[in-house]
Image (cartoon, rainbow, N blue to C red; front, side):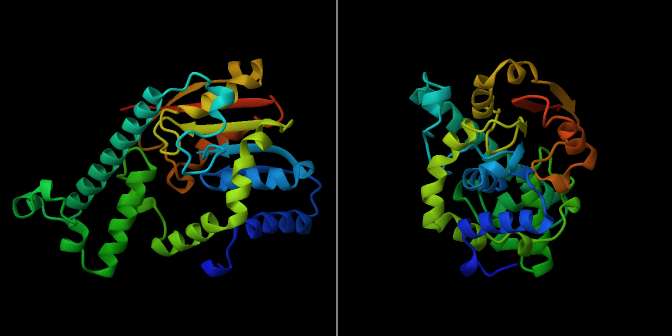
Length: 277
């Protein structure tokens, strides 16, 4: 992996094009996950003639991460009000509190944090429990895996299946991409690019995926694209331990089943996964 100083958004797009050329492919169907969708949007913008279709998994919406009111709202949600924004913000706050509680409970069950921690450190003081109790490097890695799994899955108890550690998730690399002036320019064109794409697009997202909790935005982004999109919404109930934001934390049959045979059937389609408690 390149050091963060050498990473840029434009370089990632070019890397993808170089890969297509090396593979000798005239067109590619891109399957992207999370922020990888922003790379897919950028590649589509730069090389629209090379994209046969898109499968967008846990897709970050086509807008800048800091946009409180993304530009696509005027197209898909003309009645968007501050009350809608407040409801979305409340949902995000609830999600953040829930995943933090899940991570803490797992750490207590695993013995990393004592059950009576609140006696010495009242919750209202907002204590840094990791700094107080988790000292060893091995324990720090385990705690990171617990919290990462709590963020990216509905339950978090399958944290041992989260392979690797912090070395595979370098925030500095993400920061380098987000700081790229080219990214700041291109991100404003994601929605026009995606909206104008004539090929098939498949969106797969969970009801508790933090990039669009509900989901709220994606049903509106997809619905204007014809009857095929409107009629392809399928509710699928999955055990809460099975549905994960991170593909490596989900059984492989899930994404295989959801993506199989979808590209080429419709102009746009959308599938959301409903969690069971």
